[in-house]
Length: 128
Picture 1 (cartoon, rainbow, N blue to C red):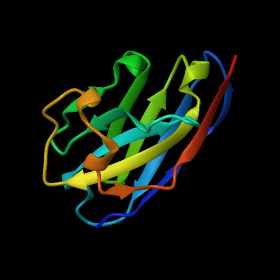
Picture 2: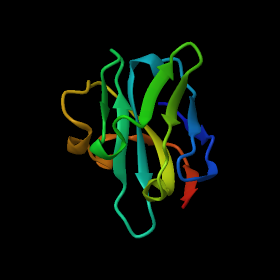
Picture 3: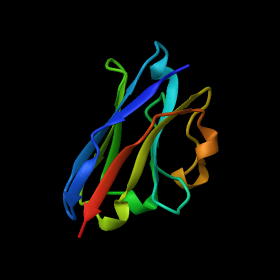
Picture 4: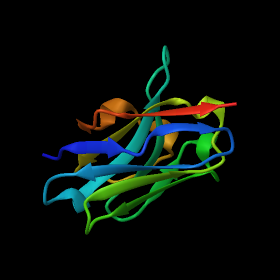
């Protein structure tokens, strides 16, 4: 089992940048498929980006070219570098993890229910 703690959220103006981090506990972190999801008020939780144990990466179309997901297995940490932020990126961002499978599809094909382990979330607010 892994425990996840997000950090790095905040308030920025449109066009700005933020870097989210997700610290994971547990010795088998490197074998997990990890992802970032986000949820705006009144909306479904949607996948933003994911990276598996082999380094395969997938992004939601809405963030391609602006967001970069990465992981540092030595530090048990997942990152999300967010650039050119837009007001529509405003949401609570969650780190998620699971094990035993690899990424084979686009981010749009993965649901929150595919991931068993979740952090508490970090708020990102982008003002226009």
